[in-house]
Image (cartoon, rainbow, N blue to C red):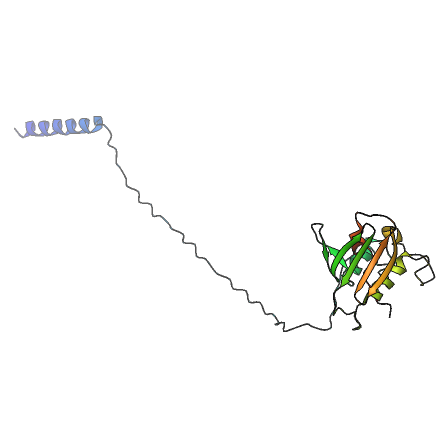
Amino acid sequence: MRTNRFVLFGALLLLITALTACAAPQTVKETVVVKETVVVEKEVETIVEVTATPVTGPQKGGTLAIGLADEVVTLDPADYRDRATETVIRNMFDGLVTRTTDGRVVLELAKSAELIDDTTWEFVLKQGVTFHNGEDLTAEDVKFTFDRIISENGIAYPEAHTSSRKGLIAPLESVEVVDDYTVRFHLSAPWPVGLYISRSSPKTTSKK
């Protein structure tokens, strides 16, 4: 009887082993937890301190460097034709009229400009205008300026010669002083661009 039990137990053991061997493989699911790393960008504000010296008014002294395309040949406003000299002189002297960046002719030293007839321009000067030395600007100064340009050998230095700017105002024959603040330009013939005489010619200079 005991023998039969051992046989039965052995048979059952073989059966379990066979079933275990033939069983389909099982899939084991693993849960993987991924921790997310969050990077927080922090804005850093940089403060730059600039120390400036307060300007309370015109300052004297110091050096100002200016670059030019060529050398300045003279500071005589009646005796030049080059652009570099023109650039400097126009920052030193004023004319009866001047021209804006958009091409308009506007009054500068003149209070008014009038075409009296086909060949005569009359300019009335602003009063209270002074030269660098404090002297008043008058009609005599305007005449002196233009006489140096239109006269033969009107430029005395470094030796007598005619102004290189004479050709620019060729129709201008003479300048007449009407009173202390009125001057007339007499032309040889009608000249449509006559108002430009006092702009394209050199600036007014003192005869004193």
